[in-house]
Amino acid sequence: MAQGCALSTTFTTGIMGPSQLLQRGSSAAVAPSMASPSQSQKWNLSRNVVAVMAPPQPQQRSPASTGSVKHAMTVTEKILAKASDKERLSPGENVWVNVDTLMTHDVCGPGTIGIFKREFGEDAKVWDREKIILIPDHYIFTADERANRNVDILRDFAKEQNIKYFYDITDKSDFKANPDYKGVCHVALAQEGHCRPGEVLFGTDSHTCNAGAFGQFATGIGNTDAGFIFGTGKLLVKVPPTLRFRLEGEMPPYLLAKDLILQIIGEISVSGATYKAMEFCGSAVDAMTMEDRMTICNMIVEAGGKNGVVAADKVTFQYLEGKTTVPYEPVYSDDSASYLEEYVFDVSKLEPLVAKPHSPDNRDTARACKDVKIDRVYIGSCTGGKTEDFMAAAKILAASGDSVKVPTFLVPATQKVWLDLYTLKVPGTDKTPAEIFAAAGCDTPTSPSCGACLGGPRDTYARLNEPKVCVSTTNRNFPGRMGHKEGQIYLASPFTAAASALTGYVTDPRDFL
Image 1 (cartoon, one colour):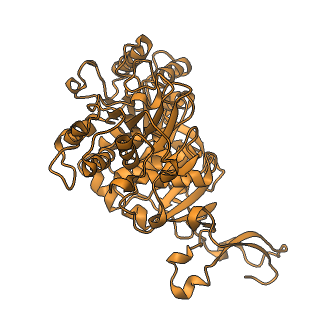
Image 2 (cartoon, helix red, strand yellow):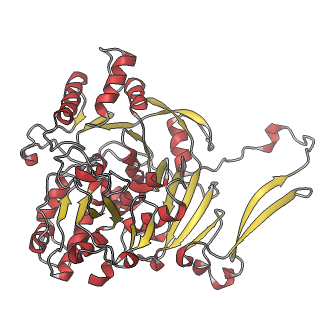
């Protein structure tokens, strides 16, 4: 350190968090269990620089003689810098970013369209008809006239503006008769190649952050912002600071990505990442599939996060093969980038979790809730309705060989997921997930949509119309979220959901693995 500087430091001893699983500290902090023996003592304490002060010094050299100093940035800062034509950005700056993709659906689309026409004119044209995605998915399979009208408004606007990507549904009696219809927007965006590293994606849905799994900046916005993007292709964004989450170690066979994000939300609370980027890295993340990473990024908004992001790698590139012809340019955090805080988890020491009513951060272990009697199980949504989610649930049911004790509802996220349930074999068996679900007495997989995750009209499939207790693979458990205000929702992984279906109680999946 330069002579004459006063340094103030704080030291955090030990490791904080349940079962000594978490270390909070500076970006240099390393979990003792992961350091080499020679480093263990060195890294036993986490060192945070709080302030560095130095007296004013006379200018010794002209600026030209000092050379250039690189400004280290996180992946989020780099994406926003590129999108705003800036060489560098820092948290707190407000910049106009150029939008690569805007998505809206049947719930928010009509409002967005109304604002666009009001502000830009009835005959105005959108800034780019190939960068807007209209995707009905929320309130689709219902007799509700207003819900149906929302889809009509999307259809009329798509025709008027010649929108290239409108995933329409006209025959709701048989979703398979609608080749353009996809299902849940966030999963469909990934499957259709609209999620690309290094890009900026906005959507009128809070779980748009799901796409951060592809190494892009993706976040939810309101109708007003979306209407402005319709007309300009730009949005004013405040650069968020970044929290880094290092997930290290090997995933036990009884854990899923849902358990990890519930652990993180329980650790930092539903407001712990308010308007912050949540960056995920570490050996456990490196080993994840794209669907695992989507589950993690999907629920960062339940911690208040602005966006979640996983750096693109060979897993990302392999997933995108054959899905898009649009060139993309991944970016990566600099080694010396600054993070507001860093959290380190040893995933090998975690256990299956649930989020008890009525908040996603009301974390507890599944085994601690074994006396909670349940009325039903729901497997679906953008968080827990992907192919691998159903594969996991089927694995538990197949290992048991028993029948479910409570109604178990299956809502595939997209048409592709629905097809996978009838064509793919569950590893270790010669059966498809659909065959295993049928043998266990589950409901037949229904039409792909958001289903009862958001409650919806009263005739929505599997909606909580009575004050029942439900174990669900969805993302929120606030009062009334799935319908009835007195319903109780336990958020869980597909493993835990399937195990609970077999017993009629909240159940640790290790009982069947």
